[in-house]
Amino acid sequence: MANITVSLPDETYRRVRIRAAEQNTSVSALVRRFLSELGADETDFERRKRLQDKVLASIHRFSARERMSRDEVHDRAIR
Image (cartoon, rainbow, N blue to C red; front, side):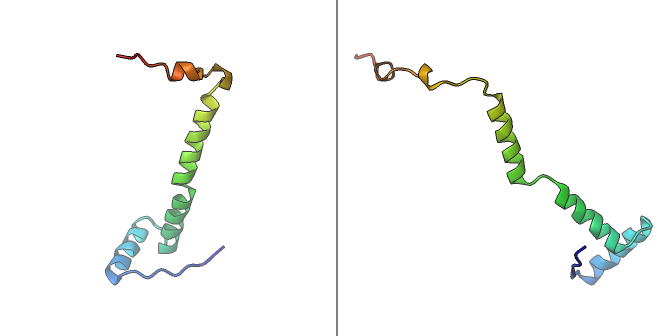
């Protein structure tokens, strides 16, 4: 397990100590819980990758042979 050092303004630390006491826990336990939850959340990259995989999995059939011909693509009504 890694150890970290965090610097806080005195007033913030005082308030956190009070909150920890109200929850019958320690400041370290509060910080550990917060950082664990933060680390467990899905990152933006992971979310986008999951959505991409979902979209790709929803494409059931694709064939390049079903493309329009060159003449169909460039067929324009002349006015």
